Image 1 (spheres, rainbow, N blue to C red):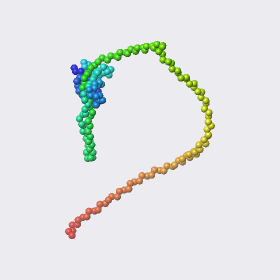
Image 2: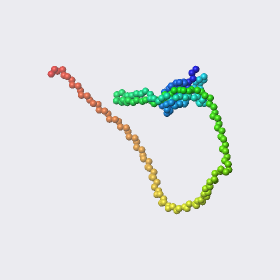
Image 3: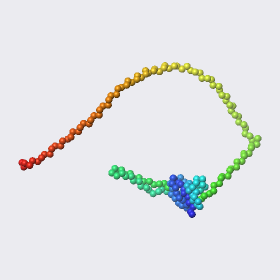
Image 4: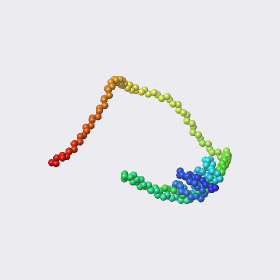
Length: 196
């Protein structure tokens, strides 16, 4: 059984094996750089698809070159309307060559030992800096109330008069549409058999 992985790049998934070269959407890495690809699935003796297990999978590739894809021609057309639009598009691509696919055992990073700092001899103590004297809080005096000039009271508007109930008029009768005058066709002239 071949060892392979399914990786994700640029929103697309690719099946890769060791030595596979593939075209993906443009990556920011320079030519010759190594790139780590995100695995979605790994298959060796057994299938690995769980997120925690996939953290152990390592898929590495080398950027071989940056290139552009073939030109795609876009032509929009609406018949009998005189609407024609022509456009083209070329994708920016990166060619990768897969160099390594492996399932490693992830070990916890060893805890770093923190060595206590050595105490300095008493003779080397820095001169104590004078602390600024703490400022005493100033007692606030109660603010004097200023005599405010009274504004004249706003004039009241007279209360609105209640509206009188308006008697409803009976609904107008619907008018009949005027009868159409029939256009009389002129009578066809009869040919007389008189022979005159």
